[in-house]
Amino acid sequence: MWSKELAEIKEAGLYRQLRTVDVVDDGGYALVNGKKMLMLASNNYLGLAHDERLIEASIRATKRLGAGSTGSRLTTGNTTLHEQLEERLAQFKQTEAAIVCNTGYMANIAALTTVVGKEDVILSDEMNHASIIDGCRLSRAQTIVYSHCDLHDLEEKLKAASAYRRRLIVTDGVFSMDGNIAPLPGIVALAQRYDALVMVDDAHATGVLGCCGRGTAEHFGLTGSIDIQMGTLSKAIGAEGGYIAGSRLLIDYLLNRARPFIFSTSLPPGVIASALEAIGIIQQEQERRQHLLQMSRKLYGGLTALGYDIWGGETPILAVICKEANKAVSLSQMLYEHGIFAPAIRPPTVPMGTSRVRLTVMASHQKQDIERVIAVFRTIHC
Ligand SMILES: *Cc1c(COP(=O)(O)O)cnc(C)c1O
Image (cartoon, rainbow, N blue to C red; front, side):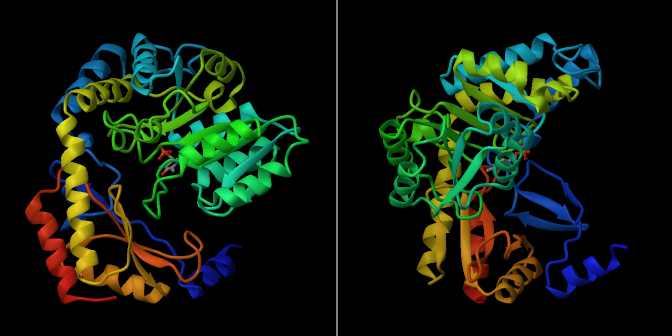
């Protein structure tokens, strides 16, 4: 029944297969299909997923409270740890309150399907993450896509959207494929002018951007101006889960109405304890983020000096633009042969003609790791 569809996927060169990735140390290296490789594809930006303190916190909580949480948050799955984590997140994000969902994906679905409905309009950046796209579809609001980071296009579309009950602008804070930062000051100004709400997906910015790692809003000095701040606990925070931070009213409403929050068993205590521990570490050990950004800039500088067309640079996400899909695939292959793991990203994930190899730097990487990557790039080309 599905073999014809799969054959078509294979023919288009878009067939996907799983690889096993067993991370063997603090995250800088991993066993990919059994081969030890420098990991340049992980979202574990601060190297916290393998931090002993997170692991120990998880074990302690699991022993005390169990392997599973036994129910949804509104039935039996709400431990004191869950409540502590939400308080901690609100404090970290400098909002009145926060709510945790099981994944970042679910947090986006929860927020978008709850805060807007049929009478409303969502203005969504064309490069937004798939979970935002799915949230928009499920929300039943009219969705209008604006050109990537294009404030002029956003303004035109806001002007045309004045008849709707509510307008919601939604954007990634850091774009996962391009590594660039959304123009939040301009977005916030337009939202004020055209009476719109702003939602930012800080999956790649939480723990990474801003002078205390609070994310994109902090990076721009706009912490009080974003209505809905979504993020994930699974990237820099090194655990698993998603969150939404905002006003007390917003969070209360989500708790009462957001179906992904209400109808799913809550995260297990061990995961919650790891996330709590990680937020403490992020706030105390600012040098992790500084080192991460230093290594990212070093890689960016080294590769652009070799003549590569690199997007990103302000964040740990760098895109080595190869244009054609097969060139990106062969660059990724060559890196693989040199013991460097970095995947090729092709359409439809990115627009035609912008196929790339995506590199993500981690705080676990040292100067000599980055120098080795640059040396490998010097000997190959895409
Ligand atoms: C990873 C990611 C998500 C989803 O988060 P998970 O916790 O992995 O479900 C949402 N938005 C963006 C921009 C992401 O990169």
